[in-house]
Image (cartoon, rainbow, N blue to C red; front, side, top):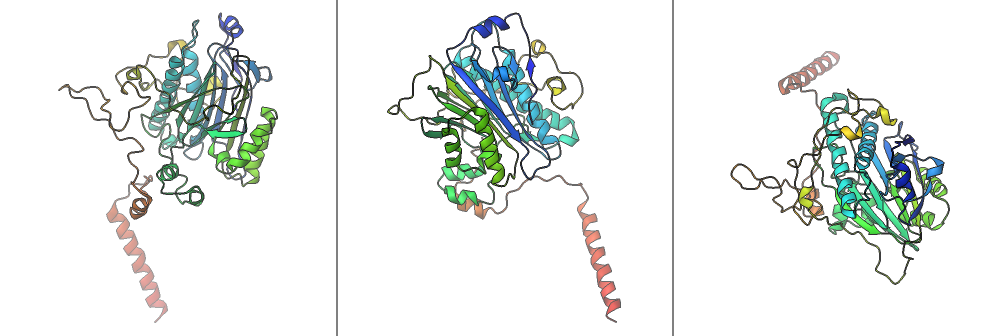
Length: 432
């Protein structure tokens, strides 16, 4: 699923675009339905926040990063029929809208961009949850999201689900996001090996997705860019079918981003193409970036800790939203609100303790009740995991809610007994 080409002009666009951070980027993105699925539930976003533009216009594919940075997002929708496509389209539209809302005449700080990125992802999750509640045809829809904001020499990753973000530095490829999936948690706990994970029967279970509940815990990580770094975001339709070494070799080829995208999508399709495939490639250069030093500390997964994290909130349910104005499929009722009319985020919905990018398992982070005692935080997705693989096996099949027709049990029993009686009578008559 491709994204629309948009440009929202403003009086300050020209001046903002002329102020650069000394970092240049070349990028391309590609999405493919794959070889098995009938429609594409993936979506992606590439946007220049300083110019308030999004899309793959050829003139924008090689540009300097402005004072407000750039935004790259991959979403992998789920929910059956067209619901997954709607969820992923909602996510990219709302994240873009929320990030653009924060653009002003003043260049933002790193904390401001990181905080706005987390809030944008939370707002998207709550909106998808709300739309699924009001429209029965959309029940159960959701989407993963891996969103990357670039500000100067700094990258921020906001992660929910199992889409991925990588950086190739020198000849080394590093995954800078963590899959929020059952199989990954078992691997990190030492209960599964990488080889066992490839044939693990529950390797498609993710522990978080936007839209499946009214709140999500966004994993916020960061990395400092070096000259020549290559960023890759992808859905699991690519990372699940193309081996790590093949991805690294494709990125090390140092060809144009367009060619890398095509090569990786072709490899995923040749490996079966069992899922939708989406990839974004961004190459970074510029005089303000430090050169790669092979003796420096290795790139690794690093959490970004925000100051004043108690101000973190989940956005409230907003009026019905239609992405038709942004080129997406029309759904819901009512027109989208303009960016300058978006309601403010209420500070009394979700709190996280200072010094953390989301509430840890032991934090009492909810607002104090009438007796002044803070309410206990709900368990995180990681807390709900078994302590060991053996415990997981002992528990038997995972309970997954399945919609039912609400037929009374006594009626089902009566039907079954009636069928048995009919077959028994028929057998008796035939054998006489």
